[in-house]
Length: 353
Image (cartoon, rainbow, N blue to C red; front, side, top):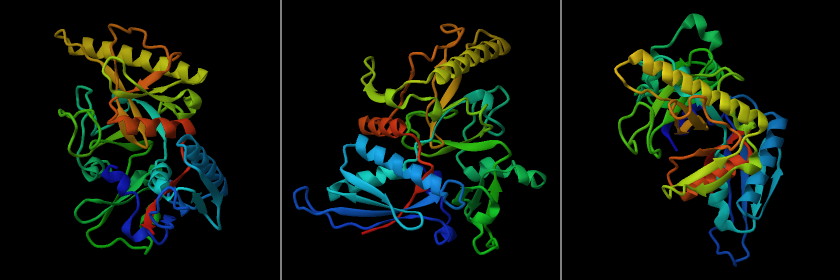
């Protein structure tokens, strides 16, 4: 997982935030008769308290993921925000951890039209920033702090030590900021997207299989932006497949009627903007605009729309494909979490017996 995702918990926050504790019966074999008992604690996506309705939904999603993965297990709610998972096969414990720590939040963004400074250059092309600190430090405005939705904590070396959370106070359990540390927020109605290690290509990066992570600032103003999300999918129509032309693993997604209409509108707008950008630059250069397919705020794919081939965009009635996936197992995992919907909480592993 990318560095930002690992940095969502601050070092000093572990006592205050809810986390996941795993205890097991040992690494027995399938026929040993042993079981694995996992105890999970939920953590709010905004850093606040976990609501009972969120925990109920998380249990339902986790049960569905175990079922789709063919794992025999029982998921029950414990005291407080605890969730207990009993597995017949202790060797599947690692798989359950993977399924419980992927939120599965899917979003579609018009890329070039939603990127904001410093993630867009003067010609309208994406700019990748290899430091989250550098991405945010020039966009701080004390007068607009009430509009900030996401705050990050940085250590003296400018590494992410906490966030994103909804308020500064959630990053300061002791009430004071240590010397050399700093808190930065995203401008109002924006979020940070990430792309890098584990992906094939990233916007604004002139390299294949990036060896580091990059960050982008993008508009976030639901329901207008992102243009589509997981609610626009037919969950049962989503599946893993293989591209017949390249042999690469893909994930096929199907839209609801509303989702298909929004996808058609998204690609139509991209075709129009690509044509306008081409005419503006002149010189016979053809510019195409992209949409980003984003999972848990990480850019997984960013297809372009060829406005010469598709001047009116692409209909969403036949669904779409997510390409650029690392391997077959990743494609299967991606399809599985999309089939079951997003978790409303985060499960974090802090110990394992």
